[in-house]
Image (cartoon, rainbow, N blue to C red; front, side, top):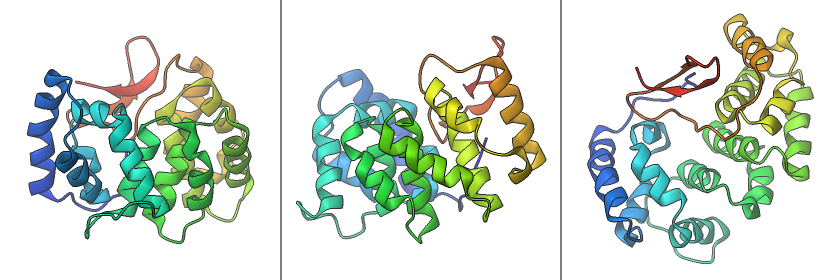
Length: 218
């Protein structure tokens, strides 16, 4: 499922699509210049980053540490770094050390930063602090759009902890199209592994042949 984002910046997105497979094959540390470029990618273009590059950077401790240092002011960040994108990279890393950061930024007035932080919380929904914050968002009936965003992110992550929060969102606070997918996903059970958001290029969030909901290629 797709959340609303602006049109991607084509030049950066195409560069990542070419760089990703090469880095994956090399199995070498992500070069600092590439990690810096990934941190300056505009948030509305993250869906065009290749799955291979996403995996390489998310698993590269030095790159993730660099992003954490940018966020916490321990290292000078590039001039045009994108805060929402960097929070999203920290979420992709699955490093629970950043849960406090996700909690703090989940109420950020910038919708993109808050969305990236909630994605990080969704990936750590089994952690007490993340679960508490997610339940507070799920119980706040003031924003239908916020509930829809939360539901979509939890659907994409799709593991048992995410489904536990998903079940607490009132269907009355969701658009019918999202509520239907939530009901179907919950009825079929959680995945054994976490999914990703957004889906990489050439894939889309849909129900697969085994009945599970995930990013699927055509």
